[in-house]
Length: 528
Image (cartoon, rainbow, N blue to C red; front, side, top):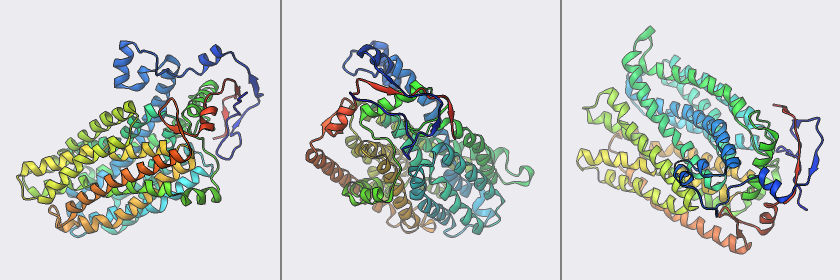
């Protein structure tokens, strides 16, 4: 008889106070299915379920699971979007502020713009992996992430006080340091709550919410420049950082309530005891292992395996091939675009990225395939880089190449979703692989922008776009290499496919179908 133990935190202790007694609940098959109802994928769906489910998967599920998933969306997913949008605003704001008066006001006529990114990347580099270790060692994300966001808010606003580039270098370093927890932290949390037919589009929309932030930043800068420039003696580009910091504070505070941690240790007040148990059962059915306290021996074991290292190749190489951040420099150099237009035109590319994230993420969820859609996502950026490498083409072709490159935006979130599925046997690996991958990416980004896209050469770079083409080709090869290794491991360990289309070991498939459960009637009194 299979049983399920009370929910434990990362340190294997029950992290919620409770005066209740754990009782064995023996249920008939019908009662168990009523309480832990999962959507039967073989059951024919109604026309409304098919129609609504094609728009958003939750509407195509059975009532119990539909209500649960929509509840996750309402609190966890929407909050994760808002959090990343605010963080990406800051990254976009530097570029938008630079072309909206910051360059002239602070006399930034050298490599200062790239150095702002370099110092941010250095902070992100130093913080990314340690922050994931902190979370995997037992620190609740519902405490750690909002605390980092509050500090980050103050740092962003302080840029408006700077009179030259030097203090901005230090501020950008610490902004990167405190921001480094957000992206890999939410990737780990989302992957711990959503099933494979839900995760792809949500990770895509989560990461591509940054594109929405870039759109909003362009509109915000255009609006602030026209309406607030010089108001109270403050330049329009400074207002961008002030507004960004102000709106991020209430979002950070909401994180203490909205972030649910993990199914096995959640104390979220918007989930009752049955819903917490239901979340655990869903992840058991998928075969996704819950977090445990990370030890040094476990960390050594993770990085002794070739699997994480092979995965880092497609994760990082594709990152090096991005060049959309230099679009507005070309618009400025053309000479016939206004400041408002320089800020607004790139938002069309951001819109393309968001639309493609939803479409490609949905298709990858529906087909249960990640790597094919990853390869297809490489095509637009490769085509755009080839056109820009030629360079001496009509202005419309350069415009097309820059905008078309945004259609490759789903590649990175699909790669992350693939990681959640290929490393679902270890929550620690899922967290560390993204944190370490970001560390490598930002370490490389600290110098690749200076080498391949030096600001004085803008907008025609000697070999930046040629390098981008090479990175796209290497990314495609690395995807196929990792796929080959995954297939080899599946054969070696005689893994079988579960009902979600994921390969799991036989013992995990058995554990995913308990007929009898052990339930803990916890009271809603949790230690935050």
